[in-house]
Image 1 (cartoon, one colour):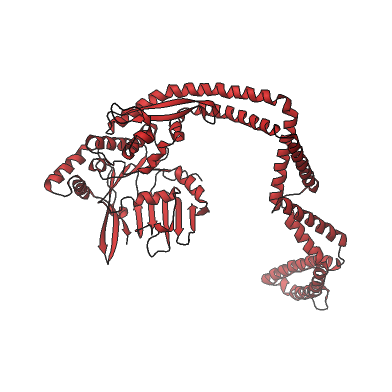
Image 2 (cartoon, rainbow, N blue to C red):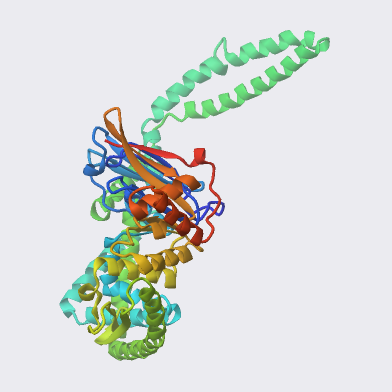
Length: 555
């Protein structure tokens, strides 16, 4: 379900109820670069975990806050709303704009708007398929042409394989399909015909009761010595005199006249029903026979009439394909070879395009990766030829990498640490652009500092120029670059731990940066923090704190 045109592209609000140790969280979010900081254990990643549920990540009862029956996460993109609910009973529900949807549909909607880079999500880079996609996203035309040629070859090959099955099996299948198609064609079923047939059968089976009721109503309405129609006619005559002198009486006389006309019309219809007392055994038998046929076909091909009609259409299509296979057997092998050659030719064009795009892309990625604290890194795309054309080309594409000087290039799985993978993912997001309006990074700064931390901050800031970027970080260099700085903190109130998420004022932000730098707010730490903030580009104006404060109660 696409977002409404009036809805902001980025996540504007997040609400969380009873997630893990969270009791309630209501968080207003903004475009640009938002940083979330706090001491270890404060729960900085609660936002990431909640958004992960909206993306369809696995939910289980252990996530529900102790003492609560269920958890609820709701994300707002302006007026567009998505939500996910989980309960202890194992039941859950997902909604998009208030409509209940499957979890898969919720994930599809959210994945067009939001991307999360956990440290472990960078593991997706270890997939050869995902590495290939990095390159192929630059070649949509060549890839589409290859996919079309490959599908044509595979379809013809599948037809040929069907022809190579035993003649007896194919003949048996043809006989069965012809019988089924003939049986269903002769039945000439119509969509939605079952309920009207049942209604008509019910009417014909009770025609005497219907006629008797109509006769009784007719007696009261017009045929009895004292009837409704007679009484209304008397009332009309009674008003004929006053109507000559009084406008209200004349109006009432007109209304009574209309009522009498209606009563006479109803009487005519009741008379027809009352006179139709004789059952029609032939019509009843026809209806029963038709419904019996429908029931028989539903048992064989159903269970519903719609299922029977779908089966009929599928059987006709399969029969036509088998009959076409018999007719085309003489030329199909030559067609398969020709289509194979065409797929290979188009595949060679795709290979050349990949080779042309691989080196510039690798160099562009490498320039960013080296800025991110890996000055000796090397990276390249490798194309290894397949023995036969595959679904995605003539080659297996992989990303080869090393972060250390003097080391051979190897698969990412063998050569990159978790932190290195996260920074490679950050480089990819910056160079190729994130595919969604909102991007979340959780602890992307793990294991780095100094110049590398500044470089990561620069890249995140650059990405935030065109995206909403939410970053959970423990580095002051990154937090200082944010347009919006939120702090996650917790305290004990009434014997329970309460965690809060606050948008910091300029003074609070200065103190938080100082704490992140030195663990305290000494004058020296504050001076260092002030220098770091002043060196960063000017942040967006702070909104009203009352509108931006959120609180979380946790056990």
